[in-house]
Length: 176
Image 1: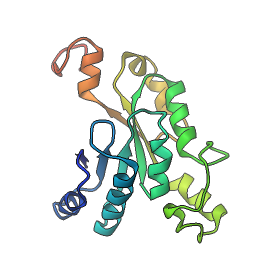
Image 2: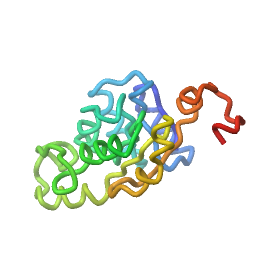
Image 3: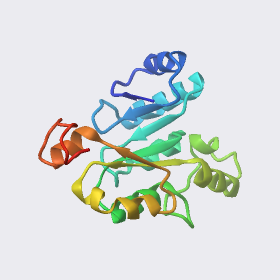
Image 4: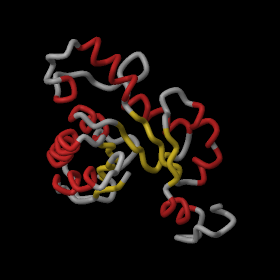
């Protein structure tokens, strides 16, 4: 995959043509608003490449809005504990697995897909990736990995090395 910080749909088309498996729409560090996220998800759908959205925080309402737009999943930044990871899963999944709000949105073809079917399919297919980038997340790594609904653990090297007091030093024993 590739991280995209600019709200340029053509860039997603080029990433798909270049053979990337997915794109991460980086709202944490990028220049995106809710409308650009929806437009980029549409571009990803048209290009046949899944869009994962990284919201500004693990508990941001941007996550559910990106999923409503049709994003394939969420990459949750700055998760510091298993409790934070659980909050992420709850915000991304519908009941009974979570507490995401349900509406007639693009992801369910504006309510034309039967809602029970949409909820079931969405809970099954939505990717929940958790960024490991704090000392707390390292301490609780096994607990985070064992949480139902967590699909991917992704090390955020820049923030993790910074949090460990060794910014950018990926060869340091504290990081490796």
